Length: 315
Image (tube, rainbow, N blue to C red; front, top):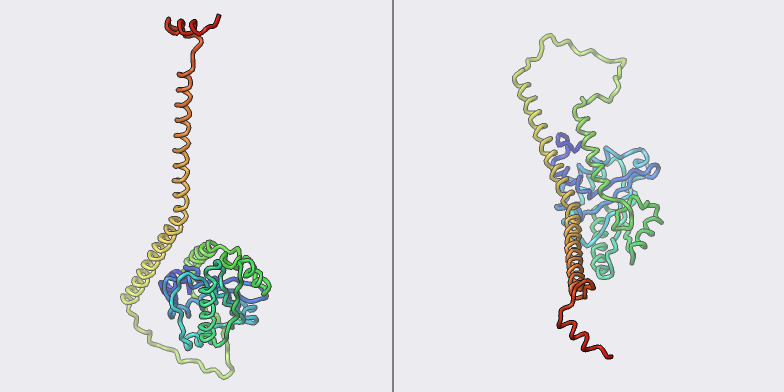
């Protein structure tokens, strides 16, 4: 299972994986830790939840996770998110096929101010009921009246701040997940050309019977094989181009978001610069007016000015 588009993950699955709606962390000796934020999705999971969870399990699952289980934090915020899936049978199949169990499931309400407490309480209650119905195991519901309070409650449960996003008071930045995604794509693209090797050992039985030797070679159509190889290469090339276009669009979106505040800051600085230039010009004009209005000592007085000055002298 890879993000190259040539494996079991479809393009829709890959798009969901890259949203960061589910971020997984390895914790040696404690099992995996997953942060789920469905508000980062633009559409429901659907059946993609199967393949996405198996994809993460194939990368991160280890002996500690198989023994201790996975801890899940489901973030509840006021941002819009898709309609939840309540197909219990689908989740039963997924949990039965996963190589690890869900040890702890926490529904955590993000603190967004006093004005949204009632809304978040309702959404937290709703998510708790939906998750309990799907997993047949009711999760813990965590809510606090401040961001610091939420963080302290999670830290008291053994969760680390660097694994929690900013909406829960943590220090995790989703740009790190984008970097991890780009790293996985480069690694999986290299490994996609590696031939699959058998992972079983040859076993010999004492009562074995040798198969009869086939004297007649099976007929093979070289043209058909060539067509299949060409079709496979064309599909791989197409999916690779689609992934490159998707990656470029994602880069364009990210840099566009980063460029927008820079544009606003540049406009603000340009406005301040124009104001400063206007102030300097007004100050210089005022200085020139003061110099013209003041009397120059080296300038000769006219007869009228001399008579006016003399008439004002008291002898």
